[in-house]
Length: 263
Image (cartoon, rainbow, N blue to C red):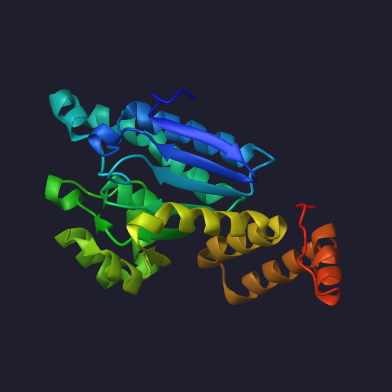
């Protein structure tokens, strides 16, 4: 993609980086951004070279929310405009959840509205110490999209999710870490390096194992214990027949670092 595209996709060394690229408007999501995001997720997840999907953003913020100017311009056609924007970005969020690879979000600055929803949709998140999260929807007289009403209660519980969405208070890095909304907080100056280290660590791990872990955890909410045990047993047995599992055993007993190939 060209550097002027609203979303950039690069795949190298097993890392598929999806970079939001509208820094002049704090990466506010318009229709073109939503469509490009959807297409980048589809391309990244389908590429056999991808071992981890990384979400980043250019400029001073991750995503400051949806593009309110787009809705204002729509006037009485705002419902149709909403459907035009929400359709592709919801497809992107579904794509992240369905992607076999782990998804890591790297957050800084404002992470608001749809931006917070997208961040919550990732499997893991690392944040700079200047990050400020805000659900923001109630502030503009609307309700969540991009799966926030599904992900947030599962992360913090129903009562806390009600508070976060209804009151739309700012959540700083320390509070986001305490609530489990992010996994790590690092100084802003170190965010890029620490993000790369974590992404490389995921990319060098056993792909089949990470894919199985993601699927088991994401599917666990809809299963009873016996169903989950059966799924665990089936997946463990399938992975036990893989070259990666044999490589892990040989590396363990040989006291060396394993080299995984994803087969």
